[in-house]
Length: 539
Image 1 (tube, rainbow, N blue to C red):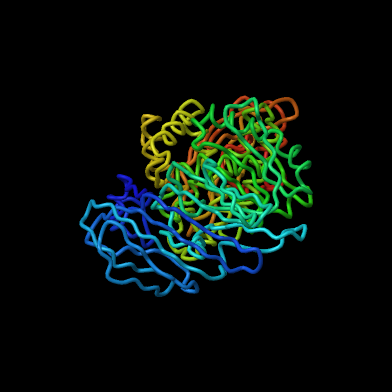
Image 2 (image 1 turned 60 degrees about the vertical axis):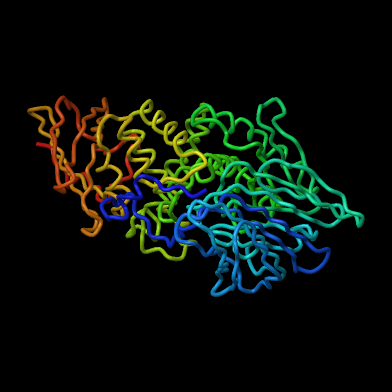
């Protein structure tokens, strides 16, 4: 359903960079529910579909405008609840002149046929068997059913999926029944009763084995795999039930009725479709479905699916969260080294990325596939880790739980997370969110030190030397002076205005081996200049 965060009002006035909304959003319509009926043929790629759209008129008198591939033939449109004068498809938009006063609930059913060019793929799988799988992200649902193909307008969805004999079909939500037809074909009915974004509304079908897992858990989970890969999947997903339990305990209740892990033809390694995660069929076949991927996609059920970014330019609220909470699973079950290694890889990915000169909230992006970059994923995850260190564990997790509880089955902007975290921390965190989300790059620190033997102290100078276009960062940095016999720590502050700061570390009685900044990896920063020992001095 269509939800307007309070922060959107500020964005309309251009006063809050963390509430910026760029995408073209149709605010005159609030779609409540889709019913998607699709017939998958025994041969060929042509489908017949009928999609019913129930919506509330929010402003004006219409029309209803849906994203829809102009390559389909619209056979008819049947209105319910108001008059319809005409309908036309133009530039991948279906405009239906269906009239009603604001507040009125209307419904139309669009009957159509054709061969999907994207979004729904009817093809042979990795083992040579015919299958059908949807793959919507980011705005490709329009290629197989008419929709408001944007994350801001979440809705419930139901399906009637007619498939060839011997096939099974899976989709979002709970299985509502299976009808057998005289020809051996079957119709699988699925229903998702919680509002989800269109990009996670999917179906999959083929000759598929289904294996229940986690039978001792409250949430039913299952593996939908090609028969050749079902035995492998049982081992690969053995800790999937543990992941749901850990995230439920840490974040809040699992948001849906079931969780299916589906081997599919997604173009991605994994795709977090609500309650039906799709994984790459080739990763299965080559035995490369790792627990890190499973944890990432499972975390998405809370972040991205249940709490969805209102605007694509805030996609870090989905991908950054999954990229952090995925590794966090291992920390929460006591595998600290796995978590630490993942954080190191996250930082290295940011340092080596080709989007370092762009901010996380990047309003210049118009091709939404381009949001799949190191800023949205790895830098977003690093921001969450730094936020956790900034406010402390108890405040961080209280804020995360409140954020999830407040916006579950709804949408959020970066400003919504900032407001909740500031309230939980009992101080403004605007500076933190603005510098890490709206500034490009990251701090690059040069260090120089001098040891005064007589005073048994070390004087340390630190400078931010990142490009001027990246701006200056406000930081609290741990500094560790290491000698052969001891390590001494101190803390130094950058105020966010000046680029240089200094400190004196007393009590250093031995020769200095090295001076290390941020030894625990709390911050996303890079020491770009480490002067050799001859450049540092002792006197």
